[in-house]
Length: 206
Length: 238
Image 1 (spheres, rainbow over the protein chains, first blue to last red):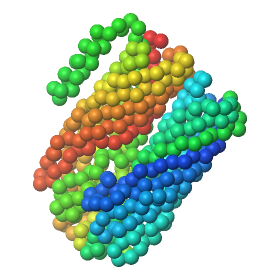
Image 2 (cartoon, chains in turn cyan, red):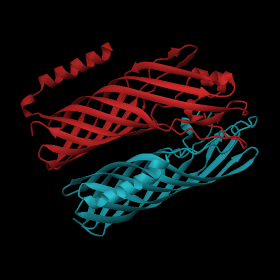
Image 3 (tube, rainbow over the protein chains, first blue to last red):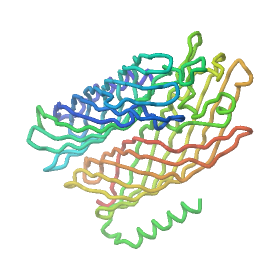
Image 4 (cartoon, rainbow over the protein chains, first blue to last red):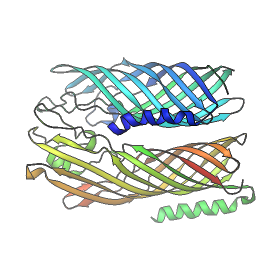
């Protein structure tokens, strides 16, 4: 993973000047992440999934038909997760820094559709409450992912955006699922789908 | 196998019955990646000897005093080729794909007693032949968005190996099988000339093989997963 962790951003940034007609945009989004922690994908789950809402900043560079998308998003657990067994509740906050590149599909008189791939750096915090105490979460990970979104122009320099994203990222084990075990085997799974909507301001246009 | 042949014949008859003179033919070649290739990588031996119920999803165990490394979900390399017939706003497509684990899927964990280290390695490759149909929208001759679904014939191999100083935890197995996974796809194209476009595609596969045995071990080959590919499209009659 280290290769991709360092090389991917360098590759994307260095490749950017190859394309002309750039457009610089920045904006804000609000989002939703159902089943943050991916409980439903795990066995022995017998509780309530965690649901996160998010607020983020978007930074997007369009080089004609190629785009780069970055920003930062804070994801907050508005419904805590209850897993069952030794894991009482999970309260996982995280900051996600996306770094994606892909194709920008201009649609005249409407805006654009875009889809791309890359990954997200995830800085996770929060805690897991177990029957034997509280375990703090402090994780830094990189997860591969995809995004697809729509930009709908509401003004020459302002667009409404709607975006879907998928990221695959799991932590190493942090807590004990079965109190009789001598090892940690419960991990935080940041994998899942994210939906975002917001506004994008175009500082410069084609 | 017979099922996919019947579906393929049906699709081609359908295509032949349509007004082909108004059609566009296109071919694309793409490469990309697939996170979490191979699904859970579960097998019977892991359950019986290591008490791992969900393969790679719960193989990782950590404890102070051991030299352990996280077994990360495998990352797959994907390549795809397809031929597409476009009739106004509908398309029919047949192609071939290849997927292989190139990173992740290996590390060191503990046995179920938490006292012995076990080195783990998961690998998988697969080839598939999807047949899909869907809706395609062309915008001003400049860009195209397509959404569709179908099924594929997929054939592949999943293998695992476990090594430990304790002979009880030395094991390897290999499982080869096929399945007919369902396929959903979304793609976007930008035309860089009248007959050539750049394409990005997200394809989701859902399907596993029947249970396959290798000695006393047993598993399914899981073709499920999402793949992102990008490449070029050549239009032959545009």
